[in-house]
Amino acid sequence: MINSHQFQQAAKQFRAGRISLKEFTDLVIHDRPGRKPNEVAVRSKNCDSKIPDQGMRTEVAPSKILSREADAHKGDFGRVLAIGGSSEMAGAIGLTSMATLKSGSGLVRAMVPNEIQTVVAGWSPCVMTVAMDSSNGQIEPSGKLDMSQHHQWADAVAIGPGMGQSRKLDQWVAELYRDVKGPMVVDADGLNALASAGADLAIHAGPRVLTPHPGEFRKLTGTTSTNRQELESVAKQLAGEASLVMVLKGNRTYVTDGGLGYHNASGNPGMATAGSGDVLTGVIAALLGQGMPALDAAVTGVYLHGVAGDAAAESVGQPSVLATDILDNLSVAFKKQLKVAEKTIGF
Image 1 (tube, helix red, strand yellow):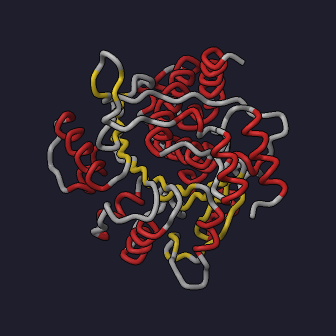
Image 2: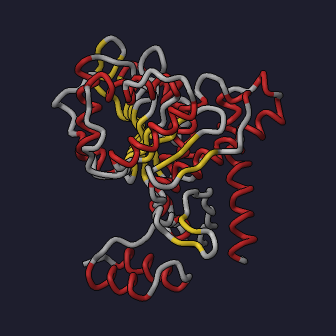
C-alpha cells in the first residue's frame, strides 16, 4: 500500500494530466511506481515506430524539460549517487556532483576516498559526502561499507570521474555495473575499469549509459579504428547487442541505443578542456534521476551540455572556456529548454 504522501503526489500528477487514470489506479490499488517529474514528456519511440509518410524512425531529439509544480519538494527530483575521485583528481567528482545539482537533482551524495572528502564537500555545502576507505589515494573496496544501502537510496548512479584504477577497484566497478538495479552512467576510469576487468557489457541489472571519448571507446571495444564513421557503427552495434546507451563523445557527439541515434549539434571546440566530460556525466545522471529513460536522458544531457558550452564560449571566448564555465552556464541551457516546453505545451 502507498502512504498518504505518495497518494497526494499521484493525485497531483493525475490532476495535472501527467499520468492517465489507469496509471493513477495502478499506483493506488496495485502499488505500481508512478512517473517522476520529467518522465511523461520523454518517451522515445522504438526504432520500428512508424511516422506517417516518413517510414521507420531512426533519429531522436532532445526532450522537453517540464516546469516544476508549486508544491514540489526535493524528493520529487531524484537522488543521485556519484562515485569517484582520487587524491590526484578530486575536482572530477566535484564537477560531476555540482553538475548533477545544477541539472535539477534534489539530493546528491558523493562517495569518495577519505583523503578528499573535505575537498569535495568544500565545492558546495549542498553536496553530501561519504568517505570510503582508501589506498594510495584511491577508493579501496571493502566489506565494511554496505554499498547496497547507498545504491538502493539512489534513483541514479554516476561512477568513474577521477577514480583512478587498480585491479581490485576495476573488479568492484564491474560488479556494481552488473548488480545495481537502477540507472547508471559510467564515465572515464569507470569505463577503463570495465575494459580492464573484461566485463560483459550485456549483463547488467538496470539501464546503462556509457560516455566514452574515442580512446576510451577503443579500449572498451578492442577496435583499433580511428575512422569516426566506423567507430559510430561499432557503437551502434554494441549498444544494440548489450541493451545500453552509448554516448560516443567528440565533434557532433553520437548517441545511440542500437536502434535510434542522435548527432548533437550544440557545443564548440572550446569545450575540449579538462573536466568537461565530468560535467556531462552529472547532467545525464540528474536527468536519469528525474525519470527520463536512458536514451532521452543521454540525448538531452548531451544537447544541454553543449548549449551551456556555447553560452560559456560567448562569455569568455573559446580558448578560455573551463569546465567550471560550462557548469556555471547550465542554468542558461535549462532556462532555454524550459522555454521550449512552455511554448510547445502551452503554459
